[in-house]
Length: 80
Image (tube, rainbow, N blue to C red; front, side):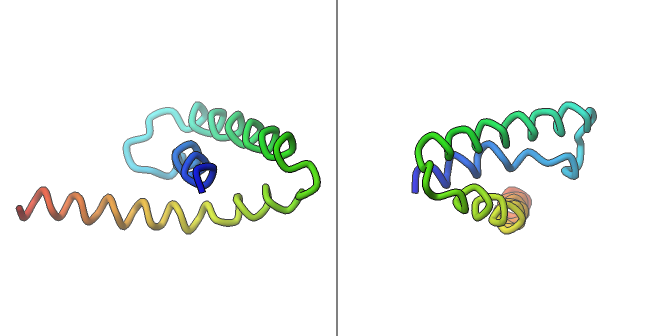
C-alpha cells in the first residue's frame, strides 16, 4: 500500500493543472518519474510485469480524486 501512495504523490503533477507556467518541465519530470517507477517495480517485482501497467492505469482516477479533494478544500476555505 505504501508504494501506491508513493506513486500517487509523485505522479500527480500534471501539465494540465491551472497555473503551470512551464509545461515542458512538468512533462520532463513526469517522464523521469515514470522511468524511476518502472525501474523500482522491475527490481522489486521482476516476475510481475503487469504491476507497472496497472499503476499507470490508476493515474487518471487518482488525478480525479485529487481534483475533487482540492475543490472540497477550497470550498471549506471559502465557507468555514
